[in-house]
Length: 150
Image 1 (tube, rainbow, N blue to C red):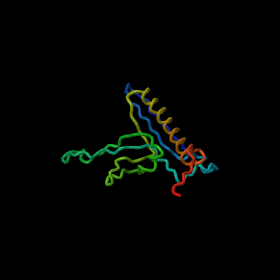
Image 2: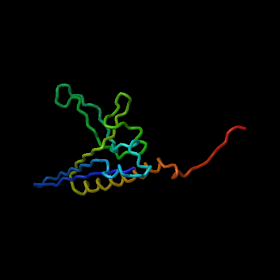
Image 3: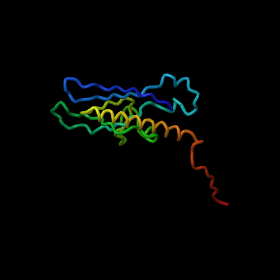
Image 4: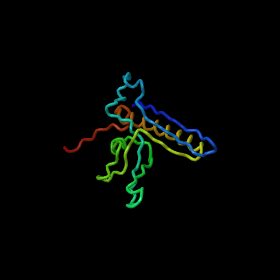
């Protein structure tokens, strides 16, 4: 599996203490040329950021009626990639989570924004390693055969 993340970080101006970190997962430019059998693009999608959709607000006479918030939850695990739908939650079936390829986070200070970027990078690197490991039987640690019956 090959991933490319594009990061953008805003600058503060006029003494405002607000920073936006924008992260987008894109298909690497050289991924079509890869001969790596573990880099199967048909079994992989770029929606690796997990969000949780809130319950719609109840304000029938206000402007916020039925408004929902999508809160960033984590970088997906390999199991999340199978269990959590991409782009939209499946509320009817009890799944308030969904995955997307774009993440935007806001911070009050630069240190938190830089730390978040570093931790997201580490989690994505971990996801890539785990994904490659579970899709390559040669890396499995347990290999045994059991016989049952006579």
